[in-house]
Length: 327
Image (cartoon, rainbow, N blue to C red; front, side, top):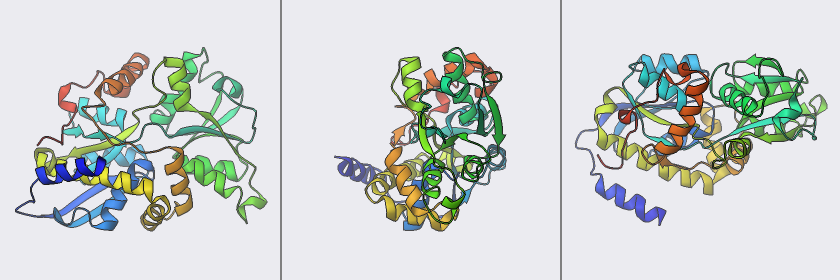
């Protein structure tokens, strides 16, 4: 059925009469970027542009510079960052959500099962005031905990930095996003890192905690693909890119290790096996932004109630939600 839908969409989207000289796809070293890299590696958009590139952003500051500077056409980013940029006047649309929660607590202690069990402990936390920190804070407060008083949060630049602190025994607990979780678990069982690294455990699943505490589905509309710049006025191009993205999601899920090898060629910090593990632990699911709007609204409402600035001062209006399936 998925193949039939993709074929129908391809037929409904005619070939472009004029190819673009260059198309830039950008994203972080995270699950949301895996299909983008597969698209570049396999030439999925060769009929759209003469040159298709993947650009890596390493932290939220780099992401904002990339978006504001018009240096990419399609950018993978956290959903709240997309809403924030949109509400602050940046021309963009959110096209889909494909990452529905990749956040886990990872710990040396196998007995920690809830966030309350981490009370009084030091936790390595990536991306201060961005997605991991925001979700952790909302979940902690929902169960009567004060993130600033009940935990010692050690902020670092990225999930990969938090992972390094774990495997080198400089912290005992961290909030990680896949594939950093899978990398940490593999590194601690492999020589020579295993000589110094602690045994680690996949602890609290923040997606399950979200569903339990907020009485919703156990998933988070965490990240997706946005369109910017000249591509913003080209709905046919958006439809082509989203069709290719969905096809790549399905291929990577069925061929996880091969997909991981493609990712490793573009992001040398990510071993193929860890990428494959992460695809199994946190499956990607392509959902159009229009179809995900209700879940996004509930997610943004929680952030807005905590701090309106997290989503740019207000909930994004209908113009934020792209509809690339119907150019």
